[in-house]
Length: 397
Ligand code: NAD
Ligand code: TYD
Image (cartoon, rainbow, N blue to C red):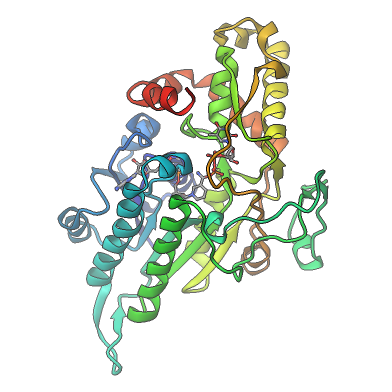
């Protein structure tokens, strides 16, 4: 049966990848995109999708009650998939308020309107009853769990449980920097204005589930990387700087650990949770890819050099001599305030319940990502016009 998705934040990094993934995977589908086109949203990112008859785009704010109501009135929405958010920790440290407004109040506005349009009456206890098949999917982050400690200075083998091993194929040499990982039961302990706002939005989603029985799922993922990633975040920023021979700013000692998830694996996980997830459950989605930032930077330098040497046509893109591409570009800069030490996700629940696992190793994912950036320099230039340079100069002065 045809399904209609309201994808908020669909012109941003993960939202656009999700739209592309879904349009390829399903024929009988309609996608309504609602995006305010902030600095992080770009119509160029979804220009092919906008030509698709199955897609309709609305420029606007998830906090705008009239606009969201109009969308629900015009389209019989089956699933809300809420990606729209202020998503950059560094920006949240500089200007926290907009994070609270968009991430908390925006999410609550969407929930309220979904409740209004999906409910068809009340049960004997006064709880709303909803049209069948409706669901609110909220995209959240592992950062709501706070920070894990690093127990090892060098990564050790990550041993998977028997039940997870049965599902996971083609992922060898997994490693970890600690004895603990985030599970869905880990207490919420956000540390930054960004993660505090995401935690609040998660809690308001759960509150609508409890108080109004609104059907929902929440997914909490680790750090994504891949095509269409805005070049303010670590990986696309260093790819961009390497190609120009610019310094690569590494916060603190570069030993903070993130768990990198290839964006397409994430989109697949979201689709599986929307379709098969148990109602009102939370699922963690991780990459089995813990790495220290400094190693991510070095691996990216190595991979770019390898591609440039093997396929010399790519050297035309360089705005620096290839000789300048080496570890000397690395520049240790003042650490981020309240910099979380380590994130690592235990995806046992989604793996064993739904059969999902992160298929893409970092080696494969980073090569795909770098090649995408090499082939799409026009996109980088387009999104990095506007306010990008101003932000960059203020941030890294
Ligand atoms: P992004 O910053 O690239 O994109 C956010 C999109 O939301 C942009 O298109 C922007 O224009 C839009 N937007 C912002 N405010 C809006 C508003 N008020 N109304 C409507 N649209 C608005 O973010 P992303 O990296 O694609 O992240 C998507 C979601 O995934 C976010 O909720 C984020 O918290 C979560 N997440 C991201 C990561 C990651 O590694 N990128 C990791 C964990 C969770
Ligand atoms: P980021 O991509 O901002 O994601 P998050 O803070 O949500 O994890 O940063 C990833 C890691 O890289 C984080 O530990 C901070 C670090 N980092 C740098 O060292 N230098 C940079 O210029 C940026 C943007 C991030």
